[in-house]
Length: 302
Image (tube, rainbow, N blue to C red):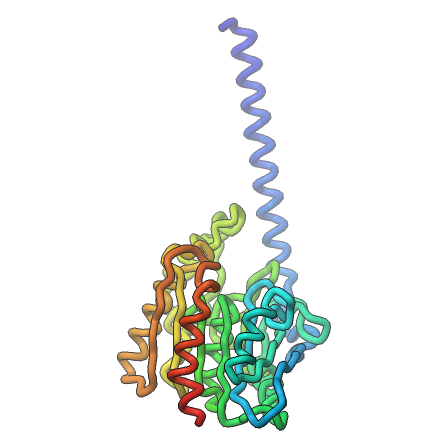
């Protein structure tokens, strides 16, 4: 290669590296600015608000199932996508409360310090409907909604059963640009949570969510402080996890919660169903969820 060509190649490489360095510095500065300006003291607008839709048939009081979506937001259990499973539950003798806790007109925009009190109040309001048996309430939540379902049942004994699908075992950061607040709160105070670290940022930038959560979970002290006290749940619990969960380690976290229940000699039924596949695969296992609820929840309500 001629000397001129070599010199040109060196210049191009230098320019490329310089552009990459400038972009990296700009991205770092923008991320620092986002974190620094985020208001961690003021509770989000519409804090404690939710949107609900109650589906119930006439003919006596029925056990109530509360459906909670995940990080997609909105109120998925009220959507056409979940109509078929919702109708199956109604056919099996349940009432169904679809509850949206963020990303709906009357709830916070983001999953940020979501009020357990507000969600609980909405559930208890639905339980006063004459078609609902207020003594028999179960919650079903997926992903971050599984985290919420377990938190609700751990703090409010009126909830008598939980189905947690690909759940987390601790309180994790809010789903905001800054991620510097807890995902959930109680009595207007943020719950202890596993903090976001700069070490997880590269994985987040390339979309490796599981890698980011694995980095967060290496902080064992934070995981212990933020752990969901599942041993307080006043009824049966079903964990449904994915063996190759790409979103976060749901299998490992469900295993950890089973060990916690065993260590506390949990007196109710607890099962862990591991489904082969990724984060969405357990959504195909609702017949097993139905069987668990029928055996360990609905029959106990009779």
